Image (cartoon, one colour):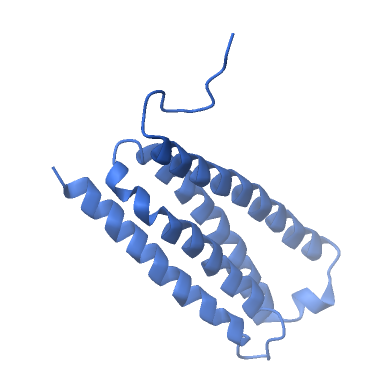
Length: 146
């Protein structure tokens, strides 16, 4: 008995690769960001002063964790929708990069920051948001095409 690894039997191989890329990113990122959330809870448990005493760092890391998990789920939803809207497959790279840059900016912005300002790594967040908007625009355009 042979097993076909492709979720879309008989479909375009490029589309299958795009769906798999989003499934890989989404499942891996969701696992990592949920583990990151557990690590943040552990820092609360042990009352780590280098984490709890820095309000901005704590807020940025929580934002990074939350955005990362949510954008991982968005990648999984994109993988589910993509076979119905194959015209949006070309913008999947923007979704994956945006989904990586937004939480990375928050997480890295909390490293080496001052008491009132994040580090310059926070600039990755708006860059990632622009990529996410581009990807969602492409998906919306594909949904409105006949």
